[in-house]
Amino acid sequence: MFDSAVYRRRRAALVASMQQAGQCGIMIFAGNDDLPSQGSASSVFRFRQDSAWVYFFGVDRPLWAAVVDIDSGEEKLYADDVDIDDIVWMGPQVPVSEMAAGAGIAATAPAAKWYEDVRKAIEQGRRVHFLPTMRDGNIQRLVRATGYPYDAVRTTGSGAGAHASEEMIKAVVALRLIKEDCEIEELDAVGELGFQMHEIARNAIAPGVYEDEISAKMEYFAKLRGWGLSFETILSQHGETLHNCARHTPIAADRLVVVDAGVESFSHYASDHTRTYPATGKFTPRQRDIVQIVADCNALAFSLTRPGITYREVHIATVRLMLERLKDLGLVHGDIDEMQAAGVGGLFMPHGLGHNMGLDVHDMEEYGENYVGYDPDQQRAKQLGLGNLRMARVLRPGHVVTDEPGIYFIPALIGQFKRDGIGRDFVDYAKLESYYDFGGVRIEDDVLVTPDGARLLGKRRLPASPDEVEAAMKR
Ligand code: GLY
Ligand code: MN
Image 1 (spheres, protein in one colour):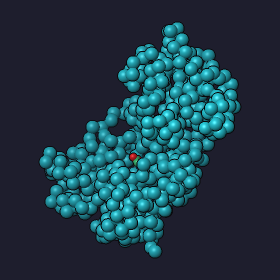
Image 2 (cartoon, protein in one colour; image 1 turned 60 degrees about the vertical axis):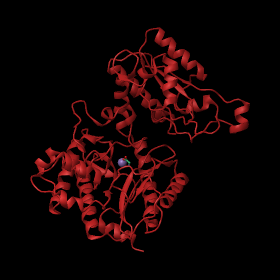
Image 3 (cartoon, rainbow, N blue to C red; image 1 turned 90 degrees about the horizontal axis):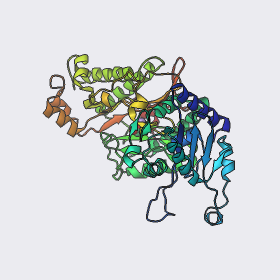
Image 4 (cartoon, rainbow, N blue to C red; image 1 turned 45 degrees about the horizontal axis):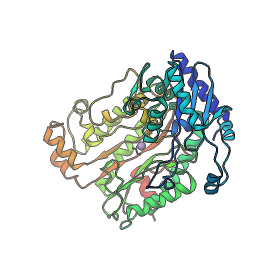
């Protein structure tokens, strides 16, 4: 946990922001509960606290709740102290009052009182603001507290009504998107752990080695040096499948291996890096061409990243370079602007350039991707690729984004484009079909926007270009 002053300051900023937006009433928070993994209350998944809870209160325990009064500024935490039965099973526990003090809050009450207090506020006609959540247990607790129907709690809206609060989402997103110095320190530290975890992968890649043998070594490191993985590792010789978490095959000598993985620190900050390796340590000429393009796209995006530019513009410029270079290879032809308008970029990169990152690897997306990644005056595109961009906003110092271009040869998608006649005038489908067995390439760094540009998080940068990768894999 950070110093209690950090949490007090964040909550005060949230209250001030809600007041400035003309809001009144109370904000209620539900920390996460334990998730059962099997049919027994004592068989649960490892506890992961809700990220908004981590941000505003820090207390890393299940089943806590809070009320923050926008009108009076009063704050109260709700949790139960353990009894002797719990101590027998769990060992001695820090008292609720002591943990609450760590969050900078003196007022505490038993967990059951939260439901009473929320219900009382609703009966008094006060507006109750809460964030949307993906965790069913939290939805159920919000249903119980507010008396609103399940579907209403899952819905987001503005103004009074039975729904999650758009005004609160906007205020929380505005705060959490701009990382504080203490957060940047955590992100730098976990970025270095991400570097070390990827080194483990790179050193283990060889023909015949099972993909999961490598990912298991990575996970061991992540659990030893941090809280664990920041998301399920993507380690695959079928990198053309974007989120390929199937890892059960031995690596073949002619394949590229995409490794997309991150560490979550004990303080719950994420890293998220991707590199693409040749199984043998040496790229074929065809692999080298594509990996070089992606490395150049990643470098271009980084060089453009600075305050004032939109990440949408950076995405578009990056895809433009990608198409120019694919044109040099003869896979596409014609005018680049026309190609982009026709959506040809999405055939090769059917995802956006990057996303926000922080306490969540895809930061705050459970509140709605557009609230997090789009400024109010930005419209999300419909096109494959650009429309998948999760972070389009005007960049500001303190934003943390990923820079993760990729090129993928997805037989099903190529077939679909061809059948639908998309890019008919630009794509050499016959040539493209010779890449059906190629796989995919992605290169990803974690980037902090600074007052005068950008820098990578972590101390060291993983080898990315074909020359750098081959040098690092020399054994
Ligand atoms: N690195 C996984 C993702 O960005 O979705
Ligand atoms: Mn990512």
